[in-house]
Length: 508
Image (cartoon, rainbow, N blue to C red; front, side):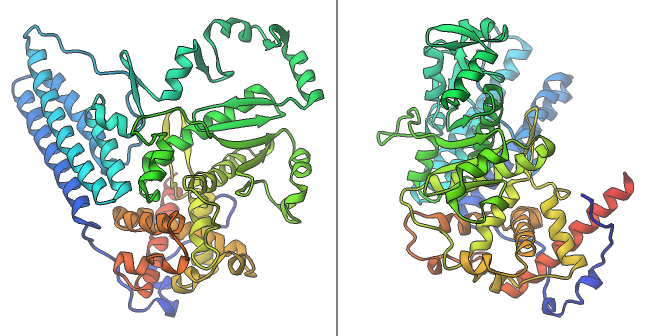
């Protein structure tokens, strides 16, 4: 397991840690609020109605159509945790000619459109009550049901251009005759053949790749790649800048889609989705900044004034500069990618709000780093997204620290540490491992029963209105569980996770 010794664990061994006496597993937990419950109930009712419709089609011998509906319902079932991108094309028109296929297609579309309209009404009710994250989550669900729901598209920052849904940034690029290429970024479509021939534009003429490189490095005129939400400046190459930019843009889209609860105000969500004061989508004029270096030496030289510990880092986000810094690590590309997602998490959360207030100075620093460590596990392989893989090194380390080293800091003490006190601890790597494991617990344990509570907790820490971390609603208050109970549940969760991982290894 990632180079660690192999080990086995039983719950009886774990419970030898006396601090955990009296803990009990949570069997089932009521939803955080009535709106969440209504969302779940209405979704389940629609899925049930859809299943009944599919059964009626199957009974009528229309197996092909029944299977089509069943596949759509599976994707709408939140328990599957499928990370689905929104459709980019408008739905095709259904032929007005009455046939067996158009009859069921029209009926199915009417069912979906009615459900989407009801759920969008719920989203707006939730928004008026200032449950921002849940409101945007429901709006996104609306678009999974009816991808052409105009108001939900507007709420999430999309505009329609003929038969395509796109952001204002993408629409502007299209109007300028530009296309996105995974090798070259946004370029004029007519120029693509020249790029593929190995030519690059320079002062109204075309030059070779080698000439382009020599000119840029000699004049410190770095390559710059712009996406919707990022600007990457690099001395490595255009292609590398585009690769990093593409990964960061995909990561941003996933982040906002899956964790809307982390943004506590309508203003934060509008900033993320580029919504203006008039409620209209607009082009993002303040993309997040990243500097990417071709070598570690270049990284260190650029950041030598950032502090004496910069040499021990592989990447960093400096909030006073509002810029992240990374360097090329071909010998360890997996770790480099994890570092990028870690710092991007800090950057997205910090820059989603106004003001320059530091976070977690008094308390709760563990969750700032723990969540960034959790997000390191994000991977996107050809559009298939995964996160929270128990085999990921951060979570593996959390298991080893607890199970093998029997190292654990109770959550009440853990959450009392601010940044300086946390970073001065003699066993800092172990604290980072535990923080990663605790975040995994609050997001995934008991089928995600604590996920919303965790979102409210982290959102409060980053809230623009927060004056002191001591005013943040604590996890024991939000969950209705004492720290002692949460300690015990965490230990059992990590023990069970460790057994599952070990069992999977044996089967391999």
